Amino acid sequence: GRQVWGVGERRPSYNTFLSIFADQVPAVTLYQHVYTYALSSDVNQAEVGPIYEPRDRYQTFASWFLLYRDITISCPAEETS
Image (cartoon, rainbow, N blue to C red):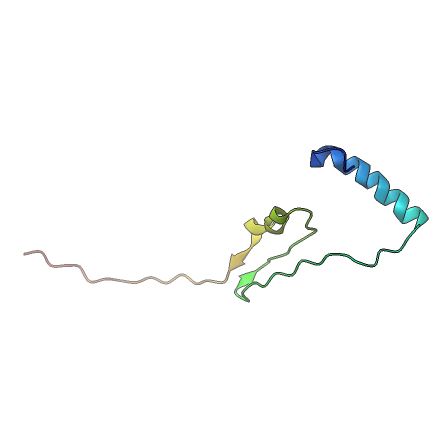
C-alpha cells in the first residue's frame, strides 16, 4: 500500500491487510492516534467520523448548524427635504 501514491488505489490493499489482520490477530496495536477538536456548544450536529486526512474533519460540515431565531427590525422611514 505504501508504494502506491493515490489514496483510491491504496485503499484496496489496506482493506485486505486490515481484514487479514483482524482475522489472524498477529499483534496487538498499542497506540492509535486520537484527534480532539473543540467546538462551541452553539454548533449542533457536528459529527466527525474517521479522519484519514486533515480535510476529513469537515466531511459533515454541511449538516452543522447554529441555533438561531428570526428577528424582524423596523427602521423608521427617513424624511427627505
